[in-house]
Image 1 (cartoon, one colour):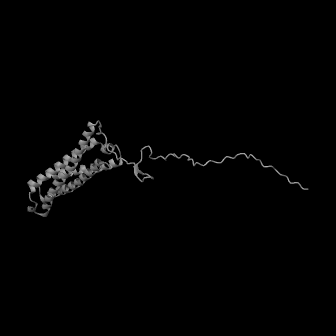
Image 2 (cartoon, rainbow, N blue to C red):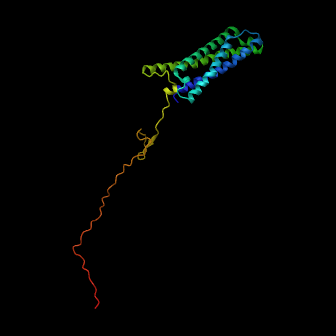
Image 3 (cartoon, rainbow, N blue to C red):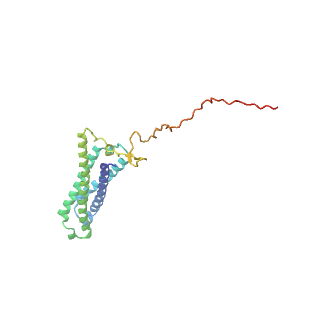
Length: 227
């Protein structure tokens, strides 16, 4: 697997995890507003919306890219647009939660009852995971954009292709061990997959069959007579 494809899978998986955390803390904060008689928190609603979009799309992008080649959701231009948009949402969620934690809650230990302290801690957690998701998504986006520019300068316009199509997995040819020297040498491409040709030639041993010569003294036939 190419390192960029592995980087894509890791980033989308990590962003999905951050989205699940945002969904949990945001939904819990929204459910406690009426109980604690607190004002509505903008970060909670934004976190839930961001998490829903990320959870519904990012795992689907991973699975579709692994199962199919050339899918619309795997195109580099789609990656740049959608991941950049989700990165902005993660940044906005983290920034809103951080602002609420600094200006509204300030110190969690000063709040009562315990449920209020829990919501205060969840606000800080939402800020942290919002920023972590944003950093991961934009790190992949910037890396992909730099590679896209480099390939364009070389005359390769890959923005309509997927990462898997642009950087395929390269297969290696298995080495062949020489029977005489024991040295491992790579097999030539024109020799791979074909039986070796028979190049043996008959050898001469130096032995020649003796020639028969005519007997200069032919044998005389004798006949026996009975007297």
